[in-house]
Length: 311
Ligand code: G3H
Ligand code: 13P
Ligand code: ZN
Image: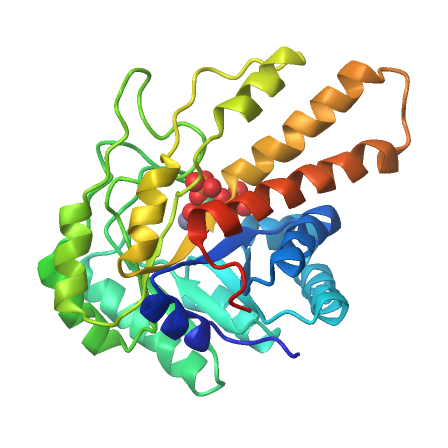
């Protein structure tokens, strides 16, 4: 099984009322944990790489790790650039073998977002690569971009048809109240998503795949474990799983999860050193961290996204 684009995955997910998990990868243990889970439950996968991940691990290492995972598991896997900031990074990832890129022009004015996205689509489609665009701004932190709550804005449904038609994108990320990172809602605030906006977008773009970023649930047990073993995380509230299940039944075909993986890995490593303060072999603490990622991803695939058995 070679690397695949997300085209077929999204078509089947839309029809089947489920979503594909898009998980961020930064090193070998994360790639292995995610792909082991997907193999166990026979789920299609999107592994996504941010600019920060490329800086940390280098493009070629991540690409080779993902190729190794495909050889090892035989799964259909799409390699996707997460939050491409400009044409250059998209071009570099396309030339470097990615099958999907996101051009995140959401910080630009509508017309400039269209121009930039269209340029990426032309380059990508000529090479068999698919493109995700974004309309609306999510709050939170990704790499060097920090969008404050005041600057965040919901997607305007009245703009989606023009954006999709003029750019030719294959999928669209929207802002309906999710945000990046572990601190998505203020303490005491009730998590809420604008399903009315999603519904209107779905009506305006029938059959078109929608993407949800910032979809970690910030699982309380993981935060509690981190704090039990010396961490000092403030209260954190994520997106309730029931809301993600609902989105997956609607037009949302791709759900992005990174923070929950970070929490799972950190909780495991902290627990390990809490129990074994004298150990120093990295394999001893990275093996359980990899298992923690596997278990978390299996839970997401089966209990939240509903894409198990769909590979
Ligand atoms: O949306 C952002 C992802 O969580 C990636 O985070 O840019 O720190 O790698 P990163
Ligand atoms: P979380 O921070 O909620 O995991 O979102 C990840 C994401 O959207 C990656 O693009
Ligand atoms: Zn994102």
